[in-house]
Length: 317
Image (tube, rainbow, N blue to C red; front, top):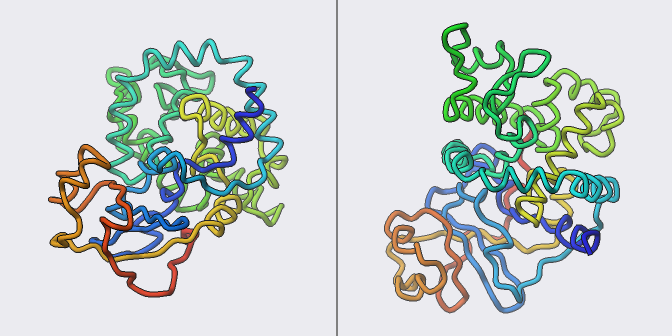
């Protein structure tokens, strides 16, 4: 049963739209994305909030296309969960206070909130953990990395153990790594090993696909990425943009029709009463023109900007 669920969930990116960042695709601030399926159209307001959207927000009868699962990933996740499900369950029970703060930081930096599960892999959400090489805190930051991101690291004060400050430092570091590699699995790898080994693996393999170059990475780094995927699956159940390679994401996006439309805050068709039936917090969205909201064809009444689609994959910097 577990294997069957893995095949189902690991092949559906729960955060389809989260792959787009403001730096990658420049869209009007008042724009939205529309996904069309048969005769139904669903729109998501605020093009910069995709990290909190995904299949969990779509109607149950709107099935999205699947693609072949990565067998290496599937096998590792299954084994990892069998070995560590009890410990992960204990972490889940005390995770709320940590995740609330982490979510706010990642959202503010326009990063996938699911990156918080990296902290589970790094430290088990234990703030006083110190590694044999000197990494410390929930995010296991090395002293030089912590100081790079303005954290105090002295005998009297070590801000690597400060939840908010260390999360902000880790998030900023992750954002920079993703700007360099353009792939979340490679970003997770670089967080563990540093950028050097990942750049070397890319150069030697000629690929930016984690599964194709993983044999060139340190064993600890390979395991680290797979632990993150497994932990992500344990907490989310559906996988997500952070657990997909760029090639897998492109394959998925090519199976879904995406249309860009312009959102007018004054549009009469966006009836507040109807919107609230779709999403309870729609009031603030319609006033501010931001957030996520799902509407059907009859409610949206919007016109496409044009026939051309934006780039599907963020530019690698």
